[in-house]
Image 1 (cartoon, helix red, strand yellow):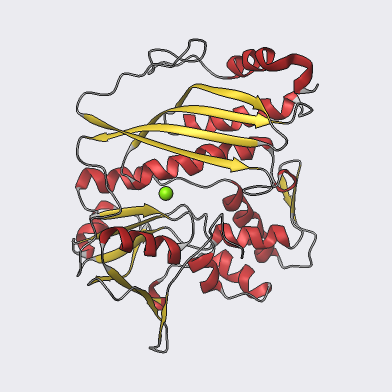
Image 2 (cartoon, protein in one colour):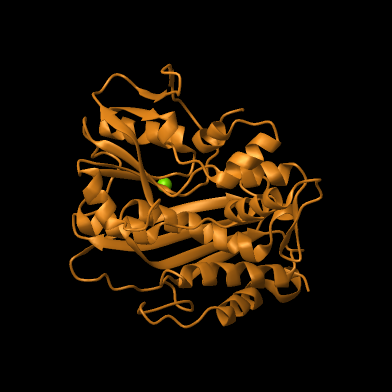
Length: 345
Ligand SMILES: [Mg+2]
């Protein structure tokens, strides 16, 4: 059935039936506004992100359920980067009138499920017609008053840390571009590759399609007061490090041999003739956290007892030197840029 067959109000009723009634919010879908009572002593965090068909995603390489999860996940990652806890979301969807109603059902199921993993309730939004599919998520979170971790607090002499391992999302995109596809929600790999590489492709495609927001890690850092500055890796390590340093008025040096590259991503990069380091630096969409801290490594490790949760990758320097990467051979390269929506590649 097409969306045009049930119309705007039919669609809203259908969406409403997919979403549970909110517990934490005072008012959900159905009134002129949703209503939310802030927790006493908390600051509100507000973030929004728009995914546009043909720009941010191609429907052929994902499923509506995963698209819903990703649209929620990228916003969750921004709340994580402030050390916050997400609470409620407003969802705006625009689509061609001949979109299938089942597509919309699955999209909202994905949004609902990813949000529910972190206690987020969908409390309102809007639907409209458009030539291309667009999904906008506005997420409201909270953090203890005055404790939001910004991009601007890094100081010379501090260590630079990153969560997880980098490059997996970019490697997944490489695999998709090489012809791997989702079929019946399984990653189909029409390539002559070994078992381990097949497994790596499956995992990295998953990572590309559904990020794993680091809410828990962001909260742990904020509660401990350990991070002086933080950003989530959406554009790529090189670019996001430049953003953080610019806001903090500092420079940075990171070391190639300390950058934690995802093993599967390395294998995929090598198979497709790419440099693993390039995927980790420029790939983007890893949605790991990059943070700076004056704490000793042992004290950071005490916050994250699981080995490999965080890795120190370099140091913050004085203003005016830019961001650079020290290579294995001792040479250094300047780090600049990443993905820019308004720039030609
Ligand atoms: Mg961000």
